[in-house]
Image 1 (tube, rainbow, N blue to C red):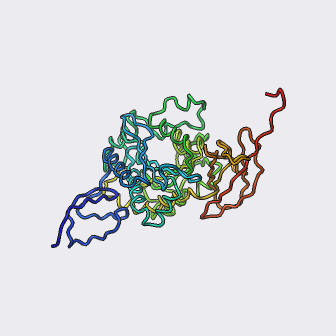
Image 2 (cartoon, one colour):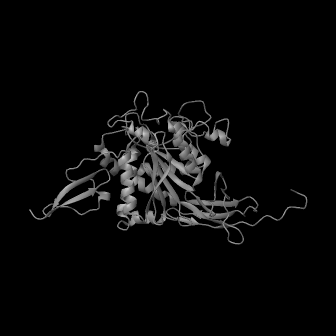
Image 3 (tube, helix red, strand yellow):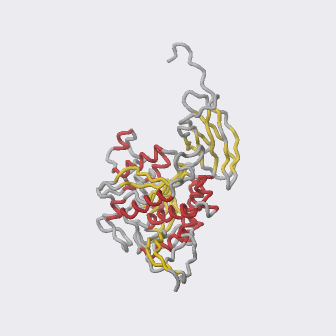
Amino acid sequence: MGTCWVRITTSLFFSVTFFVCDAFDLSGNDPGDEYSVRNSTPSYHHYDELTKLFNQLTQTYPSIAKLHTIGKSVENRELLVLEISENVANRSIGEPMFKYVANMHGDETVGRELVIALAQYLLFNYGKDERATKLVNSTDIFLMPSLNPDGFENSQEGFCESKSDYSGRENSNHVDLNRNFPDQFDDDQDYDSLIRGRQPETIAMMTWIVSNPFVLSGNLHGGAVVASYPFDNSRNKKACCIESPTPDNELFSFLAHQYSNSHPQMHYGEVCENDHFKGGVTNGAYWYKVKGGMQDFNYLHSNCFDVTFELSCCKYPNASVLPQEWSNNKEPLISFMESVHMGVKGLVLDENNNPVPKAEIKIKGINHSVSTSSRGEYWRLLLPGNYTISASAWSYKESKPEEITVVGGETLVHNIILESQTSSQPGNY
C-alpha cells in the first residue's frame, strides 16, 4: 500500500481533508484547474467561509493578492473585494483597473462562486500559466463575490426562482439593489438626490465606482443566459422591445459578443425556456427596462464600461453544477477581462511633464468622454479603426485634434500635452 499522509486540498468549490497514499494516482495538476477531487462534493461558500478563504489567499499570495472591504451590508457584513495584481501594493502608471461584481441579487449565486473560482485560478496559476500570468502582470483586477451578502444568506439552494416575497433577491431592507442607483432620467441630479434613500450597499458601490478609474467591468447575474449591455433605461414609455443605445453602442455590442461567443451555449440565444436572444446578447432596455440599474450608473458617472452577464437558467442551482458552470464560463470570464486592453491609453501632461488630473478625453463622433486619473492617466476603450482624439482641462488650452489608429489585439499608447492658458486681461475676473 505504501506510505500514507494527511493532505489538505483546496479546490475552487470546496476544501477537503483526506489521506493520500503512494499507491494513489494523483495527477499533480494545480487545483486551480481541476474539479475532480476524490471523495468530495462541490459546495457554496457562505460568508464566514468566504472571509476565511480570502484571508488565506492573501496570506498565501501576499505579493499579488490584497483583501479590501468597500463598506458593509445592512446586517453589518463586509462587502469584500479581492485585488489581484503583480504590484498589488502600488498600481503601475497606465495599468488599467478591472472589476467583476456578482450576487447583487442574493439568490443569483452562480456568479458568486465563479468569481471565487476565478480568484483562485489566477492566483494558483500565476507564474505557471502564461496567459494567467500576463493578465495579472498587466491588469489591476478586483473581484467582488457578493454585493448582497445578506440576501445570499437568506436564499435557499435549489430554488430556481425568487421567493414570493423576494427575500434573498433583495437586501435586508427589502430593496432591489439593481433598482437603487441614481437614474439618468431622475428629475433631481444634485449630490443630495444622488445619495438620498440609497441603501448602504448601493452607496458603498457608488463611492467605489466614482473614486477609482475603473475601465471595464462585468456584473454577474442569473435567471437567463445572455450578455446584456446599456442602456437599461430609456425615455420610451414601453416596458421592452425598443433599444436604448449609448454613444458607444457598437463597442458595447462587441464586448457582449466577446463573452457570448466564448461561451459554449450563450451564443445560441435560446438556452433557457424563455430565452430568445440573437447571438446571445441584448440591449438592456430592449429586453426590459430597468430604472436605477448599476451598469447605466457606471457608464454615466465614471469612466467604466459595465456589461451584465446572466449565467444560468436556475438562479440558485444545486452546487453540483458549479464545476460545469466554471467550464462554461472560464474562457468568457478571462477573455472579457483581456478586453480591458483594447483601444488607446496614455498620459495627459503639461509643458513641464506634470500630470494633468481630470482632463477630458474626447473622441470625435462619439459623444462620451472619459477623464484622467489623479496621475494624469487615461484609458479609452475603442474598436479597431481610425479616430480623432483631443483633450481639455480647466486652465489649459484644448489640445490640437490628432489622428490615431487603433489596431485589434493591442493597446495604442498616446500621450497628450496641454498648454496652460494665457493670463486673463487685467480686471477680468
